[in-house]
Image (cartoon, rainbow, N blue to C red; front, side, top):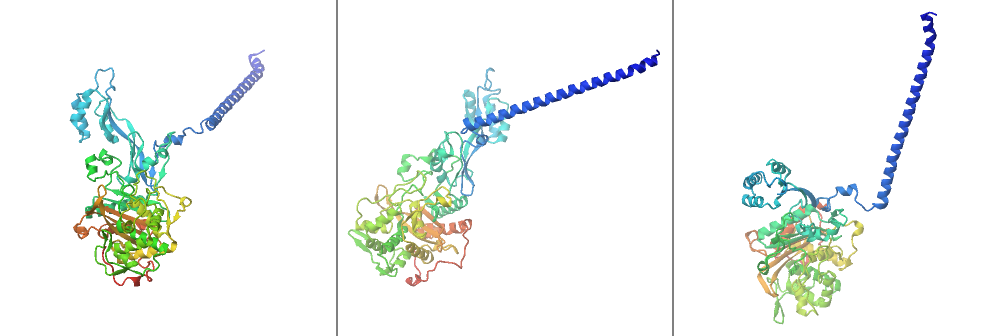
Length: 592
C-alpha cells in the first residue's frame, strides 16, 4: 500500500477524533459555566439572606438604636426662629492643645526650646501671651494653648514641626446672631447642659438621653427681634437710661415675636460677671447682663394701668357714659394727696382723663369700681402671679395682701402699689384689644390647632371701645410720638417714680418710662411694648424723662420697621372710626 493510500485511509479517523475532542471540550466548558452560574446564584442568595437577616434583626432588636441619619445629627439640636433662621447650633472647631506625651520615649516634649516654640505660635496668634505659653510648654503638663482656631491656622501650627502641638476637633454651641435674643436663648455650659432661658427649658429635648438631637422652632421672628433691639438700644442711648425691655406679642395667639432686655450679653462668650455680680454692685442696684428685665424684673408701670381700670369699670357698669365728667381737683385721702402733674381744669370726662393721663380721675374711677372688682379683674389678667411663659426667669409680682383699703384701690388705679413685669402688661394689652381674651405668652411657634382658647376677661364691646380710646391717645394725647403714619397705632404712656430700695419712699430722680401699644387698631394684630429704666433728661429728649418723650418714640420707630415684615403695610386712608368720640375732646391734649 502506498503512502498516499494510507494517508487517505487515516484522515477520516483523525477528523472523527478531533470532533470528539471538540465535543468534550464544549461539554466541559458548559459544565464549568453551569457550576459558575450556580455558585454566583448561591453567592447572591447568601448575600440576600444576610441582608434580609440583618434588616430583620434591626427591625426586631435595634428599632430604637441609632440610624445612619442619627449619626449625622449634632449632639445638641438646633434652635431656629419661626422662619427657620438658626439661632443656636452645634459647630465643630479646632483647638490648640499641648500634649507632652506625644514624643514618649524620646526623652523630651519638644524638639525646640519652649521659648522658641512660643514665639513661633505668637507669629500665628499675635494676641498670644508668649510668657504664659512658654511657662506651659516648659512645665511638661498638658493644657489648652488656645481654643477655637481656624483650619488655616491649624496648618500653620503643623508647619512648626512640633508633634506635641495638637489640634483636636471639638463641638461648640454657636449663636450665629451674636447677642441678639440672648435672654431668650441663654447659653450652654462646658458640661453641655443649657443654662438660663430656652437652652435650659429645652435641654432634654435638645439633648435627648440616647444622644439623638431634635431641633426646636421658637415663635421669635429674627427680623423683628433685631429691629426691636436696635431701636430700644437707640432709645436707651438717647435718654441715657440704665436699662430697657421690649416685647412684640401676637394678640391672637400669645406668641412672642420679639423679647429683649438691655444691656445684653453674648452667649458665645459669657463671662462670670454677665451672670453674677459682686454683692456690692448688686446692693448698689446693678443687675447682671443676663438678668431678664422683660420677664424677671417687676416694676410699678404707672399710667399704663389706667386703660385697664377704665375697661374694668365699663365691664362692671360703673362707667356707662364716656362723656361723664369727674372733678379734677387734688384728692386728699387721710395724709395722702393724689394730684396730677399739671392743672387739667376743674373736671374731665373719661376720654380726656386717658388722653391727659389724669391720676385724679383714674383714682375716682377705681374707687367707684371698688377693691373687689378691680382686684378680681387684675387677677384674671394674671397680675397676682408670675407671668406665664416657658422661661424659668419669671418675676414674682408685688401684690397687696389682705383686703385692699380705699387708698390702695385708688393708687393701684393709676399704676402704683402693684408691681408686675413688662410681660404681664403686654399680655394684658393683648386682651384689652383682641376682643377681651387673655392668653398665656409663649416662645414656641404654634400651629392654628395649638392656639389656646384663653379666658374672657373683658366683654367684646368693651374691647372695641378701648381700641378707640387707645387710638385717641396716640392721635391727640401722650402717645403722639408713637403714631407711625399709616399704621393706626394706639397705646398708653406710663411714667412712674421708682420705689426706694427696701420699700422706702419713691425716688423722684428715678422713673420707669413705658409705652404699651397695639397696631393696627382697626384690626389689632400685635402688641408692642417699650420700657426704659431710669431715663435721664437729655437734649435728645428735650430734657424730659417721661414716656411720651423716650419710650413712645421707640415704638414709633419700631412699628414702621416691623409692620411690612409682618404683612401690615401702611395705609393713611384707613383708620378706626373715632367719630363718636371726637366730640368728647374740645381741644388737642397736652403732654403727660
